[in-house]
Image (tube, rainbow, N blue to C red; front, side, top):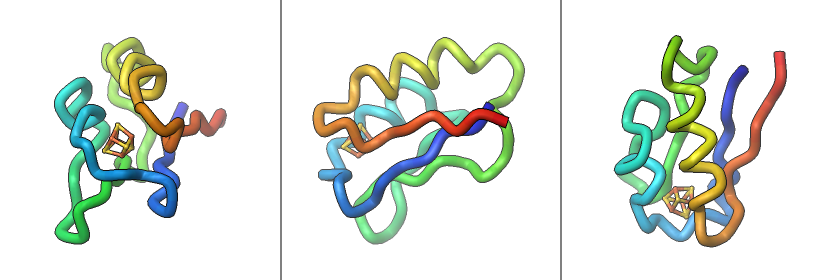
Amino acid sequence: MKFKVNQDTCIGCGLCEGTCPAVFHMTDAGVAEAIPDDVPAGEEANAQAALEGCPVGAIEKVEG
Ligand code: SF4
């Protein structure tokens, strides 16, 4: 399972990085980015929490 950030929607609040830094980080452009790889073992719940907590719904889950 992977996650993806829609950077056109992201408002750069930093919540996802704070919730799941193993998957999300802020870029120099001030928006979030998800790692391109599968979510590390044990981080699925945190990544899902970040998705659900994003105030603008900019995070989507990509199966596979
Ligand atoms: S929680 Fe949503 S709006 Fe906030 S930085 Fe992450 S993707 Fe962007």
